[in-house]
Image (cartoon, rainbow, N blue to C red; front, side):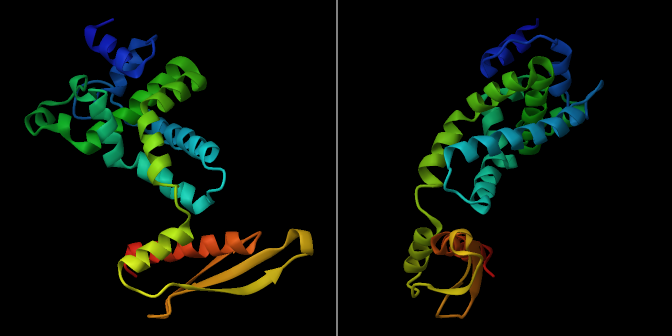
Length: 226
């Protein structure tokens, strides 16, 4: 095994069996030979599932919308590129002459794609359990930081704080509909901003859950500036 692959194995905290898989994972399409695009395709799906499962286990009270946002923040290009730099993936990349001249080894998109491809190589080399262990190791600090900053406050609290910081009145919540039998009811709630009339709706198996979902939707409107 080359020293480059030994260094990669140490950074990932795993052994390397099929060396060619990792060479391919580190080969950009600008370089000669089989490139990492197909492995990147698998790595993207693999990473999305493992991170989704980790978030689902860590945050049992979070709804689908919140989990989706947390996952997106963890697997976006900039986040993956930062993790790739922490693993020193740029030292192992195989790039064509053009990308070498223009600093491709430092480009976020190339680093993010290479990380996904490397994780797919681990999966093909060591199976799902091995890949899951490596992914959770690579993302350990990011997941812990997400737990401290991303889920500590519920959507209603975050919406209230966001409005107060802008010196705006607090939102109003109204139950629009209750359906189902007593022990299997579904609530539909509207969250309305009294100063501009904008509203968002949420549904849930309790009034509280519906209000939280409506607040989450209103936060999304505020973030989008719509």
